[in-house]
Amino acid sequence: MLQTLESVIAILMILVIFVIFYAPNEPSPEFETIIWKQNGFNALKILDDNNELREYALSNDTLSIEEKLQSLLPNLIFKVVICDESCSKPDIEVEKLVSVSYFISGATNSFNPKKIVLYMW
Image (cartoon, rainbow, N blue to C red; front, side, top):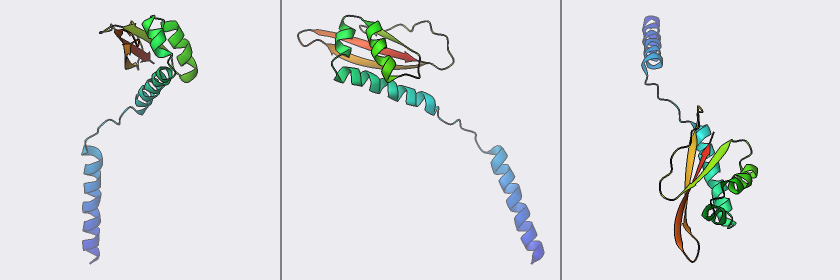
C-alpha cells in the first residue's frame, strides 16, 4: 500500500512539472493601455457633452482641447490632432503609444465632419 502511494505521488509530481514547464505562455493583456484608452475616450466625451469639443474642433483649436484635457487626464502626456477624414500619425517616439479617435458631424447648420485623434503616452 505504501509503494502505491509513493508511485501516485511520483506520477503527480512529474505531471505538475510537465504542466509548469510546457504549458503555453500567453501574454497577459496590457491593462495600463486599456485604461488609458478608456480614460481618453471618456475625457473627450465629457468635453463633447459640455459642447466645448465641437467648437474647438471646428476651429482647429487643438491647444484649447489640450488645456481642457489636462485637468481630466493629469497623469498622461498627450497630443490632439484634428483632421477631416484621415489623419497622419505625428512623429512621437515612445515605447507605449495609445490613440483614441472621436468623430463629430459638424455644426448644427452645416455638415463638416471632423476626426479628433487623441494620442497618449
